[in-house]
Image (cartoon, rainbow, N blue to C red):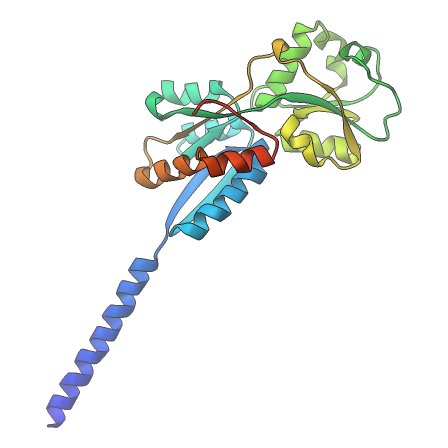
Length: 258
């Protein structure tokens, strides 16, 4: 009788341990890392929150200048999805065979604005007024920050770049440029219109005509080497869904082609 009781207890204990182990396996979450252009920080965090609440997935967000993020991927960083603020860096990854061209989509567009700190008293009614203005002008790093590249291209096409180049200071990404202007470390800066929605102690001065620079198109794709391809596609489908569109529009983005 005693042996029977011991056997029953052991079976019960093993079943309990097995049940706990299965529960842990079932509750283990997939982890997805998305490298995202800094200008997308706020909407992508909202998308992360909503997606995680409805799916058994943990999303890690890595933000920065698109060129810096692209370089990290090229050097072997473990990234599942790349969301770039221009087409150039995505095309580089396609050429390096790290992204499949047919899996790239272009869901967002943006525009560029000139902003100034409220302490700047000078009137700036047109871009020509920047010439001779002894003020620091912030741009994103030209080589790694698309917003900086777009700004330089626009200023060059307006024949203004050489006249203001000595006053330019550079930020590691567009959020850094915004912070420079808000804090007064720079007097003026070129940022995306979406980033100007919540300016502190600063204001929009002028919007840059789109004819003066390449179209500002955000591109999105899964990384070819990722082991989470099925989940990556699901996340991208959510980002480009009607709900994703609502979130991005709430933060001042325009929708592009899927």
